[in-house]
Image 1 (cartoon, rainbow, N blue to C red):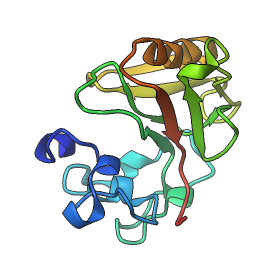
Image 2 (cartoon, rainbow, N blue to C red; image 1 turned 120 degrees about the vertical axis):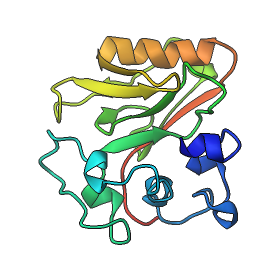
Image 3 (cartoon, helix red, strand yellow; image 1 turned 90 degrees about the vertical axis):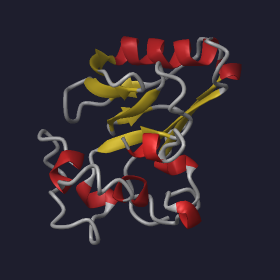
Length: 164
């Protein structure tokens, strides 16, 4: 809903000066700017995530303490097959807080779900509004398909964290 009101752009694609989160030093702003649409901070916490707690309000919410989900920096509203968000327990892709794969890797996609949350499974929210619970081989297939479609050269999954 937020993207529809912002010229079909997600918060990470809209400059801070225009009400988005692009350029913000606080990762949590990517979710915070949607607070008018996502009224309850509890929605950003997976019920199975015992390492984090529900934020008491949007102003004090921190990604490293109150958000379970990642977002896909390379997704756009125009591509309905894109990953928009998902469980933050993805490993691989360089091992950092922005897991990263590109077209030059070919079939060498090392994405995986760790043991946390859903035990080697995870949920992905897609651009078409669907949510998929998938295992590691399917996660790799989704990323590979995005890269081989020709519409995306990079898949960047930005995992929960606090201020940069």
